[in-house]
Image (cartoon, rainbow, N blue to C red):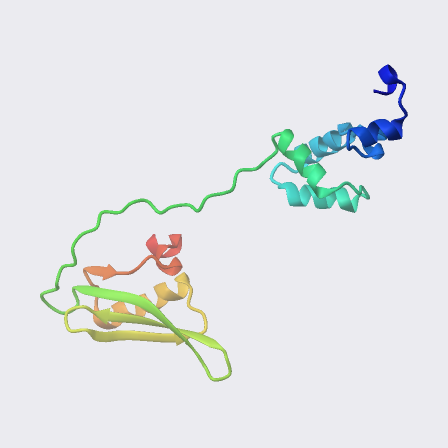
Length: 181
């Protein structure tokens, strides 16, 4: 309209119901080469770092780029790190629980926990004979790890004799390499 009909900018914009700022707008060309180069260097230097850590390093170096802009480039470069999935335990064969026919054949072990009136927590290791539900051994402490578990079990074996089978759950003390070995 300006060139063909020799109208002014304000008149042409008014006829088109358009703001004059739209006519005069010039898009800013953003040069992402510097961000790409820096992200590439950081990704090579720290391959396990995700976006948040890389962006924090850029901010600490004094670059003031918007996180949305840096993330857009980060995704464009294909630097997204896949989330680590929780490692699954292998499938185990479930056998029906057998009822023992005498004492000292099957023992069950498990932990219980509670807290004192002052807020300190404690744990109890309970070892029970499955035949008559007798509590064979109870150990109370604020922390019971796999090494302590083995020592307590050795004391019980010295006192009562060795059992044929021990039932446990999948607690960290029972699945540790120290205990299973």
